[in-house]
Length: 605
Ligand SMILES: Cc1cc2nc3c(=O)[nH]c(=O)nc-3n(C[C@H](O)[C@H](O)[C@H](O)COP(=O)(O)OP(=O)(O)OC[C@H]3O[C@@H](n4cnc5c(N)ncnc54)[C@H](O)[C@@H]3O)c2cc1C
Image (tube, rainbow, N blue to C red):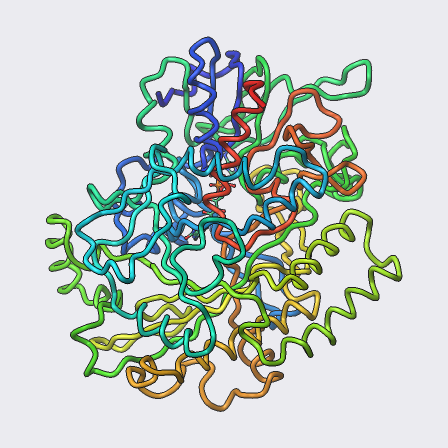
C-alpha cells in the first residue's frame, strides 16, 4: 500500500528498494511474495496511478517534458553533436520509464545476452534471460486484429502468464507492409519474429507493445506488478520520496554495510532503517548518482563534489552506453489517405475528440501503436560496409593493439568486433505512422510516415556523474555520442539506406517529394553527418551500463549477484547493470533484471 511518510520514518524494512520504476516494482512484487519479509519502495515521483495520460496509447508522448512524469534531463554539451545539449527523458513516478516509454516490446539476439556471461557474469545468459522475460510477459494474440498476414509472431518466443500484457494494435496503420516490401526489394528478409534470440531472426518484422487489448491501455510496471499486489501487508510504497544517500557503516574487514536510507519528503530529510538489504533501482542516470552521493565511486569525482570517499569504485557512472536515432519524415500522397491511418490526425482537436469517443468502444486511432521495425547488420544496409569497417574498425583495432583501452573495455570491444564479423544486426529502422521529427510541424490535414534509423552497438562510452553534493541537482550526463568515428559512419549508412527504402515500390509511389529534413541538398556522406546526423540525432532513451556488472578489475561496479563491490548488502537492479549494450529496446530486459534480481536475493539461483 502507499504509506504516509510518518509510517516510514525511522522504521525498519527488510528490503529497501530505491526507485519504483520498471525493474524496481518487478523486484518489489517478487520479493514480497514471501510474506515473512517486509519490502519498502521509495519513489521520488508521484504515484500517477490510473492516469489517462499514461495509459492511453496515442497520447503517451504528452508526458514527455512534464516534470510530473519526466525528469527531463539534458546532456552536457556534445561536441560531436553540434555542441547541443541532448534532451534526456527518464520516467518519474511509479512505473518509472515504463510509464512514459513508447511501449515497444523487443528482445535482443542470443549472442548479445550470452556476452554478459562471457564478460564474467555466470548465470547471465540467453536461457535465463528468456526464462525471466517470459515470466514477466503475458502476450495476448487478439483475434480481432484483422491482418494476420502482417501480424505474425512466434508463439514460443513469448511469455503467456506474466503480468506485463503485450499485444498487437487494434488498428493497424497500413504503412508497415509497403515499407516491409520496399525493404525486401533491397534484400532485407521479412521475418515472422525477432524474439527467439537467434540470429536468423534479423529482418523486417512487427513487434508487440505493452498494451492490454482488453482495455487498450498501457501495461506497465505499476499496473502489472504493483497494483495487483498493493494490498499485501508486507509491500509498502512511499512516493514523493527523493533518496539522497545510503548511509553506511564500515565493517572490520573494510566493507560497507547499508544501514539507513536518507530521503527528502514533505520538505524535510528523513531516514528509514535497512533490515537486510538496500537495492538501487533508480535507473541508469540516478542509481550512479545515489551511489556517488553515498561516497561510493571514483575518487576524483567525489572529491570534486565535496563528498567524503567511503569506497573507491572507479567504475561508478562510467562505461555508459546508449542507442541513438534520427527521424526522416515523408509526406504521403493524398490518394493513399483512405488506406493509411496516421497519428497526425490526432493533432486536430475535433478529430482527437471523435477518436476519443471511438476509443471508449475500443476502436480508432487510440488503439493504434508503433508496430514495424527492421534490424540488420551493416552489410545488409550498406554497399560501403567493407570500407566503413576497414577505415573505422582499424582505428579500434590499432587502439587494442596499442593498449589504448583499459582491459575491461578491451574485452567488450573484442566481443563487439566478433559480432560485427558474424554480421549480427546493429542497425535498426523503426516505422512511425505519422510525422515524428523533433522541430518539424505537420501541416493540418496531411498524413506522413517517418523512418527512424537507429544504431544499437556504439563503441563510444559516456559517463554520468554528480557535480555537486546537492541530491536534488541533476547529474552531468555525458553520452560522448560519436566519440568513436565508427558510430557516426554506421548512422550515416543507415540513413542512406532508409532513403533507398523510400525509393522502392510500393512505397515510392505513396510518397510525395523527398524527406522533409534534411532534404535533397544533403547527399554526400559528409553533409549527412555534419548537416543532419550531428544536428538532429537523439538518444533512443535506452541508457545503460553506468553501473556495469563486470569483474571489479574490468571496471565493474556490481558482481554477477548484483552486489556492489566492497559492500555486504547494497545491490543494483536496473538497466545500469547491463555490461554491454544489446540490439533491442530496453524495457523487456529491465523487467528481466528485476525478475532475476528477485531470484538471486531469494537465494533461488
Ligand atoms: C521516452 C522513453 C521511451 C522509451 N521507449 C521504449 C520502448 O518503446 N521500448 C522499450 O523497450 N524501451 C523503451 N524505453 C526504455 C525503457 O523504458 C527503459 O530502459 C527502462 O524502462 C528503464 O528501466 P529502469 O528500471 O532501469 O529505470 P526506470 O524505469 O526509469 O526507473 C527508475 C525509477 O527510479 C526513480 N528514481 C530516480 N531517482 C530517484 C531518487 N533519487 N529517489 C527515489 N526514486 C528515484 C525514478 O523516478 C523511476 O521511477 C524508453 C524510455 C524512455 C524514457
